[in-house]
Image (cartoon, rainbow, N blue to C red; front, side):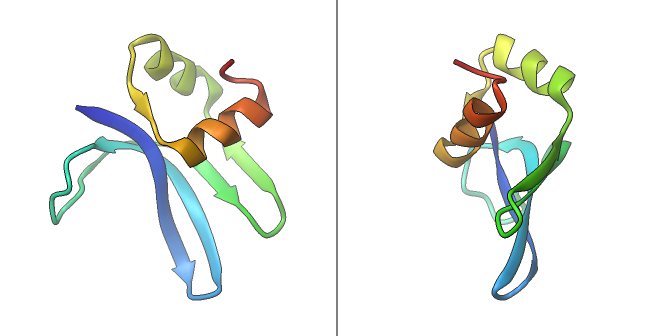
Length: 78
């Protein structure tokens, strides 16, 4: 099963997050299927591929709580 979630990148205390589609299972590798954009929580700026996000939402891919709240603020989901 696929899920849309944040993938942390960057150094300690200055994290940024990639928004990715990945397998939901807790495997060691966590292979990323597709990169959908990024989010910087410090400056509150983000760049998202809205077309691909809407495609995955329409195909009933699960969304993590934090990604859902970001999409709701951006107006991508209701």
